[in-house]
Image (cartoon, rainbow, N blue to C red; front, side, top):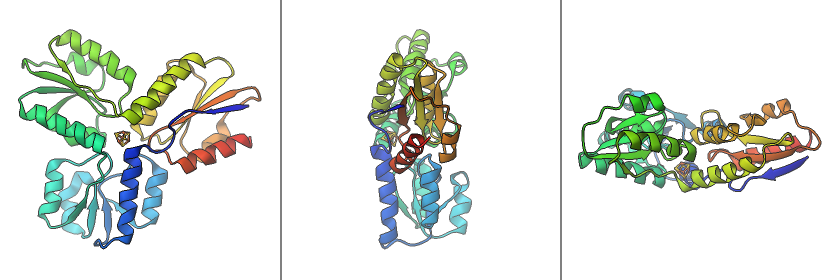
Length: 284
Ligand code: SF4
């Protein structure tokens, strides 16, 4: 068995930054309890560790209730926070630690600017994801072809943007369809470099390596959008792939002696978990 680890596995810059900022609070002079405004990142291993360190996850959808019933310090997730929610927290006198990934923040600021300049903003993203929830009032969210079909915009000012972790394949496909419907649309899409590089490399390699003996292992949480996008890219070329969510999933791998395993991961997958999975695979 040969193992090929794809470049760029494990945490991206934004996830690493968010986790580091959060853990640093433990040694700072901040009021407890520490309240995470949702899952810090979409990975249960990370969230379980934070819970064990004393961080609570509070319900961002009932923020007013939460603020009336708890004290302490509030921490945004890497996916951002609605402007009105951050204002509410500050207005009630709480400390807010903003760990939003700067790439998400830049993208959202760009969207606010277009909105203020009277643009209709078409946004390729995932419904009910925290990143898209932050700006959903300002955009037409597109998740599938039907959403494109249902668009009815008469404004001459239209721009196409996206959630930072959608797939390059999805952006390309939807952009084409949307441009056919609105030929004058401004295309201002932006996939975060960490996601894009990972997806491009996986796409290049899976195009070359998808025969009987090539198997693909994607390590990450089922809640992670960018991990699921890697799965989507890979399954276009092969059905010989495994999505490893927890260490027990390794038991179900069907690996033969002459196989080559290509290993990739989402941007919120801890490197320690990737190492653990690889070690267990080697022992199979
Ligand atoms: S995937 Fe990209 S946008 Fe998301 S947290 Fe990581 S660096 Fe930021």
